[in-house]
Image (cartoon, rainbow, N blue to C red; front, side):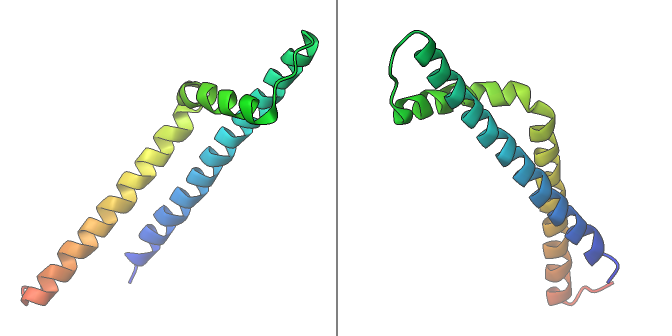
Length: 102
């Protein structure tokens, strides 16, 4: 049963890193909305919030790929670790079901 601990840890780590990455990306969108609206007010142009939000999302997509590269890499590594653990558990279960238990 000691094998359950690493998978639980990997799952928790994945959830934590994924939440952190999501919050960082959403924060970037909020900052970009504020910059767009602030810049528009400086030049005396009114930009609707939905338009600013759409532009912020479009700008944040490639920008987050660059700014949060390490976070994205950690999430990808966590996904690979959880996937490898699931694959290992599945193979072990299939071995037991076939009766080839070691």
